[in-house]
Length: 506
Image 1 (tube, rainbow, N blue to C red):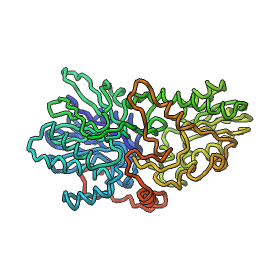
Image 2 (cartoon, rainbow, N blue to C red):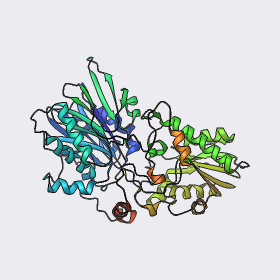
Image 3 (tube, helix red, strand yellow):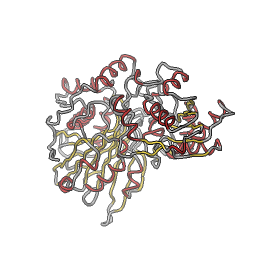
Image 4 (cartoon, rainbow, N blue to C red):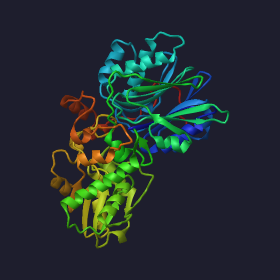
């Protein structure tokens, strides 16, 4: 999972891109990058680390130009090397830089085709570099010295025909403008907006979440529809076209459960309201299963479960309390490589307030349970703080299947719910009782009359992969490539691989 942003402005955009990436930092804490364009030349700064650590004053001064794109990254496909941070660059045709959120499910086949048929070289293991070269090849096929918007859209249509999986993309084409497009299933989010510049002209912005537009001062126009592409040309004119033959709007449910900020709106659905309704539904589930519950206090596991937990407590008529204080300088734990690192980080990330636990029956509420590491450690912390009984509720159903669309949970064996009953999971995490949200209730909570979304990618819960190309052989191969044991063996020192020039000094 990653965050992308692109801005076509009337004045330098470096600071705007930086500010947008800080707003999207929750979508990627492994690496960050910005590319700007000025007078036909690209200017790049990218490296591993948080946005504030990657960009210093001298880097910002070198990022000149009124148009640019940015990226924050969690590594899913590929590894954590600096060379695989984004945006990526290819010099032909025209010069293109691209940033990608998501994951291609047919990247291996595409890699082979790019070499054997398209005669293109891929220098990293990143599927984003594959996607960039597919787009570049499709654009080159148009054979235009000065391509028009229709040529850009034909190239995007070629990408849709060849690429499978999830992708929200922003790209710069030197001298031509900025293009953004979304996969035909709309799995990963992408929105665009506008604002009026000081000179009266319109500036445009594309981002993974609407909150980035809000904070930077842009007005939301719309979500980029599944299969749709937008192109803002060098003159600042906006062009929009549907480029996919078949579309199926099925956004990723995990965006609403966990990934997106609550102040974002995705495909017309308020993430905040969806999480409120998740809390209502979970409360009804608890009342149905345990009408005589003895819960004395509801405590969220910060931050993403807070909205659901507050609504749940209100519905149950039980006190809501902040029982854990969060160290906000520790990254998201479930996506960290290796169980040892996750356990260590949970203890560094959260600290219990003893008076909220001592002698009480406590219901802990989390957005989901993935590997169970966080749950186990937090339940132990609650007991150490003096809790009499520790109950646990998940605002999402059991995570049973690998995610292949850009979330780093590829190995089914690493999912605590895989092959276990609810009671076995309860025992594994050490809770006195455990309640999961029902999938039907989760879908109902997320749907709204204001949106035309009627279904979601819920593959982690039900194993129904919306792209229709995932079988057990694919999952077995993915597990071999991306399981924890293999990640620990990957060398990440290949920052000297050939790439667009970068200032590597500290």
